[in-house]
Length: 504
Image (cartoon, rainbow, N blue to C red; front, top):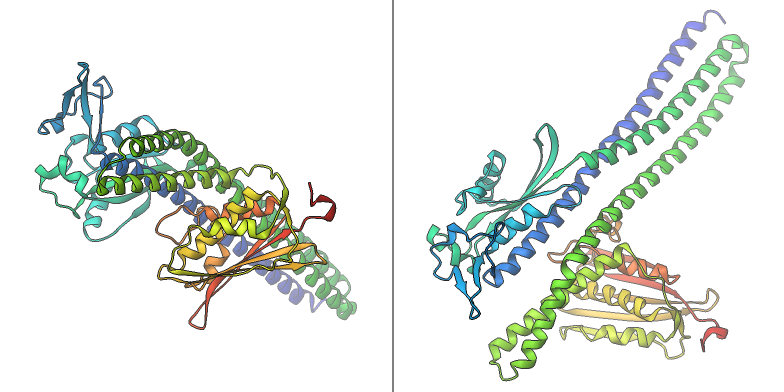
C-alpha cells in the first residue's frame, strides 16, 4: 500500500490539474462568448442609430431642406451664403432661413443623444462647415471608404474609456448637388461619413454580471470536484486493499459528476441566452418608445398632407400623382415598421372570437404580386378558430410577406390548412419556392433585429411569433438550401373553437 501511495498522489494531482483546465477552459470560452455578444449588441444599436440618422437625412434631402425662423440655435448658415434663396421673407413679412440636410442632422445629433449616451457625428475630408472636420480615427475611416469599404466598426478609446465607433459612407445624390456643387462633387462620389460612438460601459456592465454568475457556477463545480477527488484520494491511500471497489465507485461518481456538469452547463447556457434576449428586448423597448414618439407624429402629419394634396390636386399631371402615391406608400411602409417595432416589445392581450380560416387568409393575399402564383388548399369543412382575428391576420400577413420577398423573380406560394381533431387544433402552412435559408439563419430566425434583407429591421417574424403565441398557438419554420430542396415552410398551429364557444 505504501509503495503505491506516491503513484496515487501523482494521479490525483494530475486529475486536479486536468479538472482545473476543463473548468478553466469552459469558463474562458464562456467569457469570450459573452464579450463577443456584448460587441454584437453594441453594433446592432450603432447600426440602428445610423439608419435612423440616414433616414432623417434622406427625408430632409428629398425636400431640399427646410426653412425655419432664424434664432440662437438656428442662425443663417454662413456656408450656404452662395445659395440665392438661403434667406426668404414670407408674404406676411416673416423672415426664414434655409436649413440644409447636413445642418438639420447636425442640429438633431447635438441636441438629442441616444438612450445609452450615443454620440452621432457627420464628417467629411472636404467639409463645407469646418465643424464637420474629421478626427484622426474618422480620417482613416473616410480614406478606407474611398477604397470601397462600406462600413467601419471598431472599439476605440475616448477619454480613457472604451467606445464602439461605427461609420458608414455618405454617397452624393442628386439632392446634395444644390449645396455641394461648388466643391466639385458629382453624383456617386463619397461625400463623407455618418457615424456614431457608443459607450461600452453599459454593455461591459451587463457582460460583467453574466461573467460573475458564470464564474460563481464554475467555481462551485470546481470546488465540488476537488472535494470529491480529495475524498477518494484519501480513501485510496487508506484502503489500498479495496482498490477495485474504490475504482468502481469513482467511475460511477465521475459519471454522475459529468452529468451534473452537463446539466449545469446547459442551465448556464440557457440563462445566458435568456439574458441576452432580455437585454435585446430591453434595448429594443427603449428604441421603440423613442421611435414611436419621434416618428409617429411626423408620419401622421405627412400622411394627412399627402391626402390633402391628392384631394386638392384632382387634376394633377401623371408625374405629380405618381410621386404623391410613392410618398403615400413609403409613409405606409414607415408606419408599418414603427408598428412592428412597438408590437415586438409589447403585445396587447388578444380579444378572441370565432373566425374561419378563409376569413384570416383572404385579406392577406391582396398584396401578393402577379409574379407569384397562389395555391390554396383550405377545406370548407374545417372548424372555426377562436383567436384574435386582427392579431392572427397580422401574423399571417408577416409570414406571407416574408415568403413573397423570398421569391423576387416570382414563384409559387402554397397555403394549406388541416385539422387535428384529437388535439382540437388547426395547422396552417405557408410554403414558398424561394431560395430557402441556411441552418445558421434558421437558428436566429425569430431573434429581434436579425434579418438577411437589404430593407427591414428584423422584426416581422418576431411580431408574428409573439402574436401567434399570445393566442395559444405555435409557429415553426423548415427550410431547404440545396438545389434539390429549396423553399421555406412556416407552420402555424392555432386552437380550434369549442362547440360551446362557437356563437360567442
